[in-house]
Each structure stands twice: as C-alpha cells, then as structure tokens.
Amino acid sequence: MGDDGLTAGAVAHRLGIAVTTLRTWHQRYGLGPSRHESGRHRRYTEEDLARLEVMRRLTADGVPAADAARFATRAPTVPPDDLELGARHGGGHAIALGYAAPEARGLATAAMRLDAPAMRELIASSIAEIGVVQTWSELLVPVLVGIGERYAATGRYIEVEHLLTRCISEALGTVTRPVAYGQSPQVLLACADEDQHSLPLEALAAALAEHGAACRLLGARVPTLALADAVGRTAPVAVVIWSQLPTTGGADQLHTLMSGVRHAMLLIAAGPGWDRAALPAGTATPHSLDDAVGLVLPLLTRSGSGVERVDRVG
Ligand code: B12
Image (cartoon, rainbow, N blue to C red; front, side, top):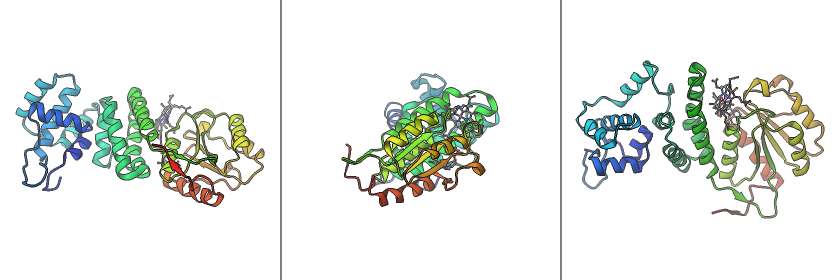
C-alpha cells in the first residue's frame, strides 16, 4: 500500500466484499478509515485493512456482525497478507493464486465465501473499468485456474466453482449487445461436442460486443451435426469452436464440419483440448482471448456485417 492509503473501492476489492457492506460496517460499527486528509476522501490505512479483514473472516464464519465488530476493533492488527498465507499454509479455505492482482485475491475470497453479490459486483466493476479482455486475463483467469487446481488437489469446492462460473456468466452477459438491424450476426461460437466449458466463449462474445460486433453463441456441448446445420443456415464468416479437454478435441468433428461448408469461412479452433497436428488445413488457433478477437474483427469489417452495427440496446 502506498503512503496515501486506500480508497473504499480498493479496500472492497481487496477483501472481496461489496462497497455497500463496507459502508454499513463503517456507519454501524465504526470500522471506517482512520486517516483524515482535508479536502479529500478519507483513506484506509494498513491497520484499518487488517481490522476489516478480521471482521470479514468472523462474519464469514457466522459470528453476528455486532460481536465480530467488537472483536475486530479490539484485535491486534495483523497484515491481511499474513492472514491469507496462514490459511493457505494450513490448507484452509483459500484459493492459491501465485502472483495475481489484489482484485483477483478479492474475487477468490468472495468465491470461497460463496458470496455471489460481491462476486458479481467485483466482476462487473472491473469490466466497466478495464474492459472484458483485461478483466478476463487479470481477474478471471487467475481465479479460474486457482479453483481448478484446488479442485484437482482436494476433489472439493465444486460448489465454489459452480457459483463462480454462474457469476462470471451473469456479469459477462450484462455487456450491452449490439443490434444490427436487418443484418444477421456473422460469427458463430460453439463448444465442441460434449465440452461443457463455455465460459471462454462467453468472454469472447462479450469482448466482441464491446467492439460493436454481434455473434451467435450456441454454448456448451454442441453435437457436430447441430453445428453443421447452424453453419449451413447462417453462413457465418467465422466459426469459433472451443475444446477444453483432450477428450473433446478430436479433429475429426472439424473435418466433418468443413466437408459440408460451401462458402468462405474461417474455422477457429480455440482452447487447449485440440489435437492441433490433425486440424483441417487453414484452421486458425488463437493463443489468447485478445488473439481470438483480433482474428474475428477484421473479417467482419471486410464483410460489412456486425461491426458497422447501428444501435445499441439500453
Ligand atoms: C469452470 C470449469 C468447469 C465448469 C465449466 C462451466 C462453464 N460454463 O464454462 C464445469 C463445472 C462444467 C466443468 C466441468 C468439468 N471439468 Co472443468 N474446469 C473449469 C475451470 C475451473 C475453468 C475453465 C475455464 O474457463 N478455463 C479458461 C482458461 C482459464 O483456461 P485455459 O484453457 O488455460 O485458457 C487459456 C488458453 O486456452 C488461451 N486461449 C487460446 N485461445 C483462446 C480463445 C479464447 C476465446 C479465449 C477466451 C482464450 C484462448 O488463453 C486462455 C487464457 O485466457 C478449469 C480450470 C482451468 N485451469 O481452466 C477446470 C478444468 C478445465 N476442468 C477439468 C475437469 C477434469 C472437468 C470435468 C471432467 C470434471 C468432472 N469430473 O466432471 C468436467 C468435464 C465436463 C466436460 N465434459 O466438459 C480439468 C481438466 C483437466 C484436463 N486437462 O483434462 C480442469 C483443468 C480443472 C483441473 N485442474 O483439474 N469445469
């Protein structure tokens, strides 16, 4: 923390709680910022943060807020990072993130508390502030990888993974979708057959929307025949197919799909599951969300569909 202290928003991000909760704790229990600077909003010090961390932990464990606040205001202050570390070393309820932004730590904390409103607020405010691509890579991916590793190591926390996934989907879904009057979206997004990992495509749909580009997102587990039908009926200029797992990344489904395509179309095989050596010739394989956006957008500009969209909803 710099000498200036932290704003309420930054503290809420770090602790993984909503700003409104922070305000309530300040108003009701006096757990507010102690540094006063005239002409500026008051800032939270390291000690304030440590007290609030104690408050957060106790309330998360079910201690009534008033009792937790009494304890938190009396407690000797321990830097929050030490508390996180203690929990992790003891194998407690924390997601190990390695190097990650404080915001990602806040989201991980909210996820472990199964605090859906806080998760939604953290993700939505990040999208509003830094956009979908950066929110995906700096906030969401570290926490998704962390929870995946926690699950692999313990076989537990499926409930955390499911609620986190739900909140990410909801927040990505709030990005305003473009409306291209009289024009059909020219991009199709689908998960490979039997693959349930739709979040990366939801991120792509939201990132494209930020650029004013519309798409059709078919979602999880799309059988090859259904995808071929959709391609035949909508003649997209690009199709992005996501495979997360080696078991869903057989290239045969892409060969089958392409054998029926009669128009110019870029096939994009995204995700770590694909058997890359066996993909149909000309298949693009992006390395990141940003890369995938960069592959799709120029096609839309050329074809005159999507990005020259007219209006926005809302
Ligand atoms: C959320 C999640 C789920 C959710 C998915 C919900 C949803 N709507 O998406 C649910 C609960 C359904 C699920 C189910 C399963 N899952 Co899962 N899941 C995850 C988790 C936590 C996040 C997935 C994700 O979104 N990854 C996206 C990013 C984080 O991953 P990435 O591929 O590394 O992304 C980089 C590149 O691919 C690259 N990139 C390249 N091109 C492009 C293009 C675009 C557009 C983007 C965005 C990125 C990109 O950039 C990315 C960084 O952004 C991962 C953990 C992980 N490390 O991924 C496990 C994980 C993928 N799951 C795993 C497993 C084992 C399963 C199950 C088999 C569990 C079970 N026993 O049932 C099932 C399989 C179901 C199925 N048939 O698909 C394993 C896979 C291990 C393996 N390699 O085989 C993982 C790695 C967890 C683990 N560590 O064990 N899962």
